[in-house]
Image 1 (tube, helix red, strand yellow):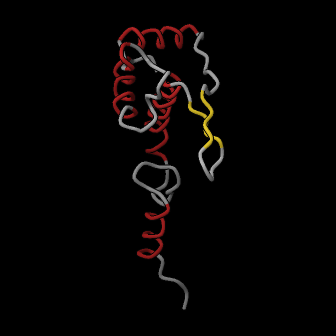
Image 2 (cartoon, helix red, strand yellow):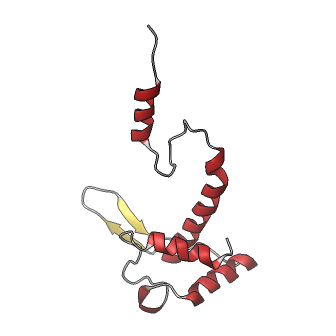
Image 3 (cartoon, helix red, strand yellow):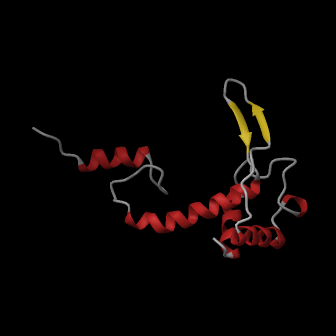
Length: 121
């Protein structure tokens, strides 16, 4: 969690997602990520001072529930946490487990049922 390279990898993964750089919320110069921002996050995490912030912007989308836009720094830390937890737990999951896993979901679960299940006669 305190490795700067992990934050750069997480940022590269998140920056292509729509809404990551919401107007009015920035991570550093010109809305990008600076090494000072990463170092500040790492310092606060190492001393226990890092605090997640409540969502800043609440938007109502037609025919949907209100949407709260989170702070990009929080999203960055959450992505690093996801990466660490995935590296720890992914190897111990059973191959038959499909929920909330990389490159797996309901379609891969259905495909596994159709190809592996023989049924009763």
